[in-house]
Image 1 (cartoon, rainbow, N blue to C red):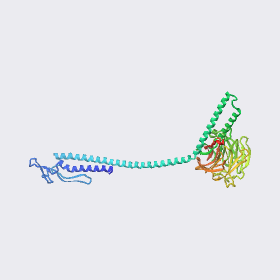
Image 2 (image 1 turned 90 degrees about the vertical axis):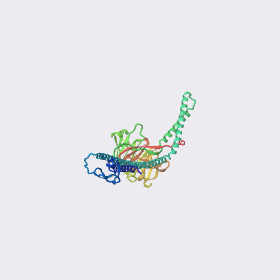
Image 3 (image 1 turned 90 degrees about the horizontal axis):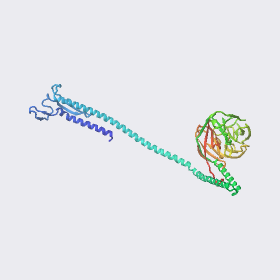
Image 4 (image 1 turned 45 degrees about the horizontal axis):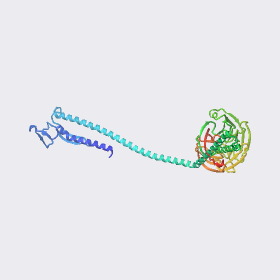
Amino acid sequence: MSVPLLKIGVVLSTMAMITNWMSQTLPSLVGLNTTRLSAASGGTLDRSTGVLPTNPEESWQVYSSAQDSEGRCICTVVAPQQTMCSRDARTKQLRQLLEKVQNMSQSIEVLDRRTQRDLQYVEKMENQMKGLESKFKQVEESHKQHLARQFKAIKAKMDELRPLIPVLEEYKADAKLVLQFKEEVQNLTSVLNELQEEIGAYDYDELQSRVSNLEERLRACMQKLACGKLTGISDPVTVKTSGSRFGSWMTDPLAPEGDNRVWYMDGYHNNRFVREYKSMVDFMNTDNFTSHRLPHPWSGTGQVVYNGSIYFNKFQSHIIIRFDLKTETILKTRSLDYAGYNNMYHYAWGGHSDIDLMVDENGLWAVYATNQNAGNIVISKLDPVSLQILQTWNTSYPKRSAGEAFIICGTLYVTNGYSGGTKVHYAYQTNASTYEYIDIPFQNKYSHISMLDYNPKDRALYAWNNGHQTLYNVTLFHVIRSDEL
């Protein structure tokens, strides 16, 4: 039995007991039972089994008593024939008793109201308890789901990190190699200090040879540290918002120390004006620039500035032009034979992006497609002075399916799209003529990338994304083997 039912039972039982007491006690209190005083016996007690008194004119007569459906006492009495205004003792007692009954009735009503209020409170508490029980179940289920999601995320992260274990082992070997270099430098320093005290104790030519050899090994080590395999791309940093939906911007990776100029080219065709900003700070905060007019309009967004010259594809042709930005003269032009142009083999976003020029740690490159390679991407290494093709690699990746592409350390990386969700998912290694499918997240913040190029000096990707000029940092893993030094 629940708590509310217990309370209702107590209330009903109490009311029945009070009613029963009233029905049995009320006549005796006012002298309305079968007991009467006999005047003939001089005050002796006389009990009669009759209902009516011997003298109805002097006493009250109980005709009947009962309980109604609600448990209340109902008494039917016959009043004496004498006047109701008499102030006899029984009338006073009856009035007092009626007052007590009224007080008891009021108390019962108060008790009933309190009981109803308590019942409502208990029902409310019962509903709240049920609600809490439901919430506890939801929290328990949510906790299980949360733990499952966390476990799944941790497992995915472990699967992502597991291939890096061999790379970390290589890093341990690299650290030992650097420590070996450090010890050799310390030994040479010690020898030089001793030479200051004892001239001629060592062969100077032999010492010089050891120093030169160590210097060459350190230079080779630093060169290899500059390259590596792409493993991550940071979130973008928006440098500026300007220009149209399409365009390109860049800095010169071979610029001398202190030359921090930024080059800016708005649009992908029918334009020949290049903006020069003195520094990245000027580019971000001002519109002060110098304008350079090219002899021909460019095509696409694959231009690049390299060692003081700008390299671009002449509009509606497969001709590459090298233009000196200082003298504003054409230094070299060369036709890229069989390369598609004029939107024949563009990137997925279009925009006459048939020929894409790039630079990395190894020099100047051209990425395009040909009929001979069925419209798939072709990679050519170019001589930056003569623009001659030094070597060519044919891939099996359709150029029209590529969102954008860039080269790092001789490896071409291709994105799967240019809008919406984007990732780097194809890599071609020119040093081994092999390819692989990868999965490197790439945040496409403004949903339309029309230019993506790597700068080996800054170790960063420059992007033009829907009228926003952005930068991405890259993470490279380096593997150095002692037998290569």
